[in-house]
Amino acid sequence: MSRLACPHCGHKENRAREYMPTEDAHRRQRQCLGCDKRFWTEERIIPLNEPQPSLHKYRKQFAKKKPTVSTYTAIHNALFKGEDR
Ligand SMILES: [Zn+2]
Image 1 (spheres, rainbow, N blue to C red):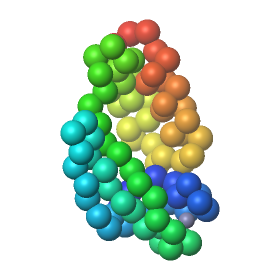
Image 2: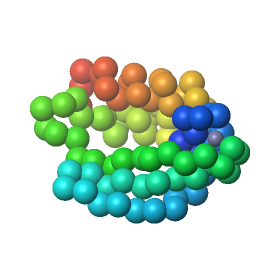
Image 3: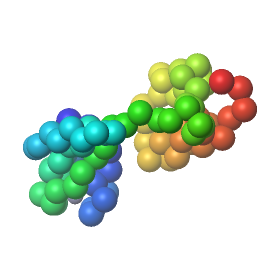
Image 4: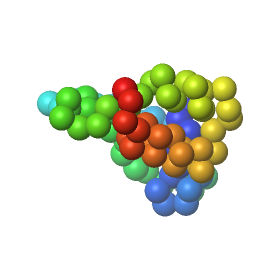
């Protein structure tokens, strides 16, 4: 189960169906528990020349709150647009 929003309907619950490792990423096919449609998620290594997330900042600001869609946006902005790492 992940809390990623379905790209078809925005539902937050889904389950993993298939797992497909590729050379540079691990991909999972997920099925939405809201609309039953399928979509893929990907886990990959972030190259060192791309902005690295700040775990410290994440923990300080968000780790104890229950995440909402706007929290996720705020997390992304804080992690990828921050200066200190
Ligand atoms: Zn859906």
